[in-house]
Amino acid sequence: MHRALTYLSRLMAILGGVMLSIVILLTVFSIVMRLFDRLFHWMVQAGFLAGLGQWMIDAGVGPILGTFELIEAGIGFVIFAFLPICQITGGHATVDIFTSAMSEGANRILRGVTEVVFAAVLVLIAVQLYGGLMTKFSSGQTTLELQFPVWYSYAIGLAGAALAAVVSVYLAVVRLIEMVTGRVMLPADLGAEH
Image 1: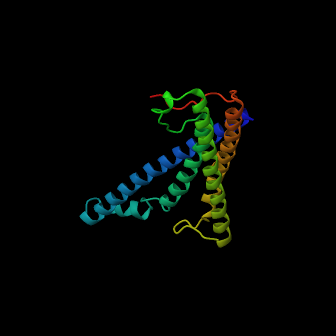
Image 2: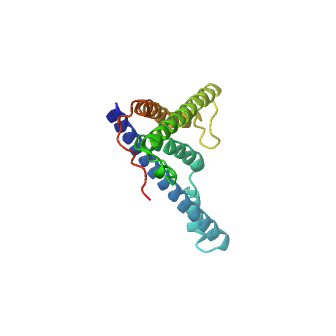
Image 3: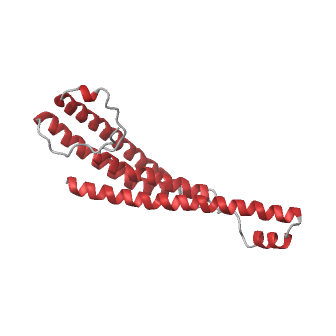
């Protein structure tokens, strides 16, 4: 089970990385095109190569329509795509000033309680995202510029949120078993070292 969830979490993180790269390229391209748009309008107003400037404006060189909508949808997916891998590897930010002085048993209890809280929060997020998806789907709401259905954004985000919820529930159950039995069932967290 752990291996399958780790595989799915890594796959989701790879998809999130691809989406993040696309969003970055889209942002850079849009900014460059917006600068060219201003340059060509200046050329027309100043009379400096006005024909070229007008030709480029007429050709459609300018900001990309719906950039903000695409970035908003893409970043929503990216955030949820990285949650499962952060959860299963223990990659969330931690402050271990106090826990480093605690006993192994106390740390095991704290780890179990933390996993249960994470599971509850991530399940709640997934359920609420699903509710939002159903609301947007039934209303038929679309984005302003591109007119694509808003529920698309909710659907791609829900994939990562649902996987994060499944991973967190799995980890909570295993950590609770570890807490009760005292045996180690999962590898130690791979959290950041400071």
